Length: 242
Ligand code: BTN
Image (cartoon, rainbow, N blue to C red; front, side, top):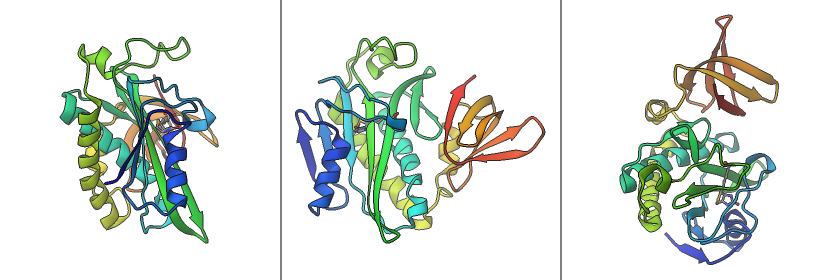
């Protein structure tokens, strides 16, 4: 793996996009000490101060159906969860689709961007942000964010966590590519899902649903059992812990 390190950048997702356009190979990784324009999902800002977090993006050039590409975000979430556990012993849980939480507070978010041309994937960029050694957070996210240091009481080594995530990713990625869906990974994904079997509130483009989370299916959609007994497949959206 080629690793591009940046002391400061707008966003590692943008760095990977630039490298991809110059022909960089599958597996290239961009890591930054600090991001000035860190991007979150839904146009939100991702606060990325110097020295305390892992702000990294990967370049993938998978030969798969563009429709399957969003599942790579789930593959990355699984890899990040496993890597964090290997390197720190902390057992985080997945909040569908791709956040990681510890004690119900967010430690990791993933923003995946991709480029397609004539229905073919040019590249996919999963960008991962992990709160590692912060001791405090800005007011607007104070109540919902935490760090590996806060939860473990120890300073954690970012390089070891990155290495463990990359190692885990290799295995999960190969499993995913074999079937080009989540069938080989569902079990592990659902075993680490934060709200499995609990009442959740889900927002998707069509509206807001309340029901019991039954985990993901092989397409990566979240299955929610509504109070009338029907099973709703949520393809994209946000789940809140209630
Ligand atoms: C979210 O939970 O909203 C997703 C956050 C993703 C943040 C990471 S940090 C590395 C990469 N570069 C970015 O600008 N965003 C992602």
